[in-house]
Amino acid sequence: MAEFDILIRAGTVVDGTRMPRYVADIGISDGRIAEIGRIAAHRAAKVIEADGLVVAPGFVDLHTHYDAQLFWDPSFSISSWHGVTSVVIGNCGFGFAPMRPDDRERAMLTMTRVEAIPYASMKAGMPWDWVTYPEFLDSVDRRPKAVNVLPYVPVSPLLVWVMGFEDAKKRRPTEDEEKELRRLLNEAMDAGGCGWSAQRLDPNGPACVQRDFDGSPMVSDVMSDETCYALARVLGERNEGFIQMTLTTDSQRRDFAHFEELARVSGRPILWNVVQPRDNRPEVHRRILSWLEECRRKGLRIYGQGVTTVDGGFAFTFKDWNLFDDSQPWCEATTGTPEERKVKLADPQRRAELKAHPPYITVTDIGKIFVSGVNRDDLKPCEGLTLRELSEKQGKDPIDAMLDLAVADDLETEFYLPQISENVEYVKEMLSYPWIIPGVSDGGAHTKFFTGGKYPTEFLAIWVREHEFLSLEEAHWRLSALPAYCAGFRNRGVLREGSPADIVIYDYDRLSIRPMEVAHDFPGGEWRRVQRADGYRNILVNGQVTFEDGQPTGCFSGKLLRHGE
Image (cartoon, rainbow, N blue to C red):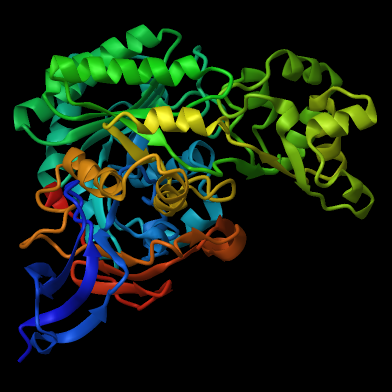
């Protein structure tokens, strides 16, 4: 009988610890790395020849929203296509547990806007065989999975469970309600939660870009500092877990102070979401990096999640676009059915408000948006033009040119919004700070707008191979070991004897991303945008091959990782 289930032979091992690469064999048995060194082929039941290929830890994606998609897509695509072997769900305080049956419809409506998950897909694809958070984890545990899943406890469902949707948006919890919130969090952590998450975007601040289905703030947006500290103390008392928070008010200094207090109260790692260079305001990311280093000197474990996608723009139509919500007039105009939106976007009086209050977070220059596709044949000449070019051609304001076209095309016009930073030197500045975690894929969310799950492939092919901003050893530490540490994984994110065999094997020179395409593969007749990768020879999760030469093997060896096990 063979000693090893799989032998990875003669690969260039980049083990995730930042140690120099080396050539070795890896023997895998019972889902774990049993031996690293020189191993005879006859000792293994199966041999994977890795000569000339990189062998590295599978990637850990700390920022996904696969909470719904996992029930109809056991592959967790597109993340799994790009070497991700572990994901964290329940980010930004959004999720589906605990959830009373009467609140399910409302919860799905909320997610249609705040994370742009298609309602028809959730309605058709989610089993709703849970009420409590422990029951939700049991449901996730029963599902086949091509990746490992680590679950945050999202705070919004906790607040709704205790206070109701409307009250949670209007007031602070009472003393008894706060006790119940703490009890629920402890119950969820006992069941296997890895910490908690929250979005706190000041409804009156500059960045309230993700809102409820009716355009109102999210429940967590109005959560008080005191409630946050109460929940942070739970983690401190347990000495486990970590916190992910998206926080933006009108005072960055105050935001920094709040994070520092969370770190002090909890004593746990805190993830600042997000660090993203902006071409028109580079001082913002520089200020954040300086503050992160100050936190390190203070002994506070605060880490930045950096947006590292190269082509991180958005493709959208006004039938379902919602990421201009940081502007109240735009939020109001893009709320409602497509017919209601069309009427509002055509209203001349409303147009004046839209031009007076342009969106900020997702766009630096409206004129750079370009027309990527139209439905009506007579509008085809507009395709390929930027709004600046179109407005000059028509003698209009760029916003009028965009909205006139959208309305004339029955909101079917597809626009492309370039990412807010095209300056690679700013990305280099961000990546030069060693405690930036790459990613923020938003996997499972905004699937009609962008494909953030490709970030590991982009990171290696563009920032490492092409621009040489980091060494390969540093890159794999950032993609695997650092996020694994923050998440509280006990032994994942590195290749060492005894560790679970979550492994990627790839051809460094061939690593690349295919063009964006539309896939009609969501329940309820819905579609999404996807991008595949080339160059991955094998992807292993818990010692079993889940992908071979980019194709799924039908193996779903991922696990629900309760307590980071």
